[in-house]
Image (cartoon, rainbow, N blue to C red; front, side):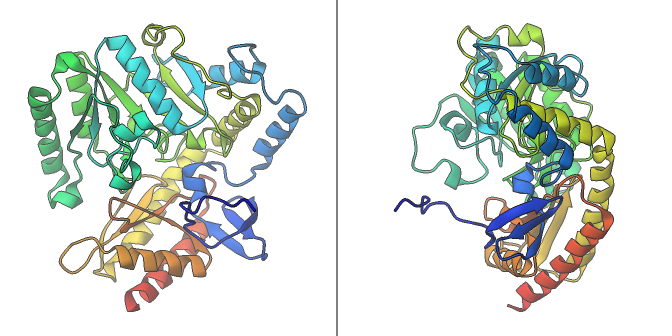
Length: 418
């Protein structure tokens, strides 16, 4: 009898039968408040009627039209619609299936476009599990251990994680930019550096918002030295942070955007966006794939854009994110075991530490378990998995935020008591 790989571990005990909005229903009929959203994928909630209808309609006409063989209308329409929300200069798109695949495509593009090899990444980054993307990933050794040698030409520069260093944000940014200059002087010469990749909020690295001054410092150095700025918006894009794109919390405009996850509300779809003049520097044959730009996924993505616009979900993410973070901070005030609460929009995190300030992974795991037992589904993140993240769908409302906070407060209390 075949079975799933034993390496796959579930974060919750739920055997899901159906989903609706921010809720998942198990086969046992129990309702769960889902603050994982498939790791930020179900941006419009589970089975939004408009997304479901668009996908069903498309399934009945054309499921797959391989887009280097034939063209199809959903792909063309989606390209036009994304042009309405992307920075105006980023007017050329290439579609793929997953975030990792899009990151790999972005690496190929920036190397071809610049004629340079080296890629800079921030310490704590997560860019994927495929071999090239894993070489860019420093959120934890589990993503890259035992598979070396990894892709060469990657240099790691510090991220301004103020809480980790025990500094103010300004001090952390000044340090990170100073160290970036040192990396460029000692490890990755500017003439050999193709791009710097950055997440507007560290994802697997601990849900740490990237300060605007750091993003702008990266932009300035990219311009000065002639390399490119790539924003990995796989998790932060499509309204997640309370702006349509996560980089929009700063004045920095990237040269390349990588997007996936919430793009199609659960259907596999990713993309990279760049100016046409940059995209056309990709070598012939370097962009392609069997399933990229699948017709059903594109139809779902168009419906996702419609829902985000018509239901004003970007504004909702900002308002509900403020409410969620305020509630998490109130709970943290009662528990010295919580070292930090941070986030941006509907990316919120609680970090657990011991009395000496070291990561408390066991306590974070107990809090996750206690939450799941009470019907609130959450996920860990961070290098030590001592940070609990909340990623509800963008359709979440005030009462659902308050319900989650009530359950979370009880779960933390129970976890602390052991």
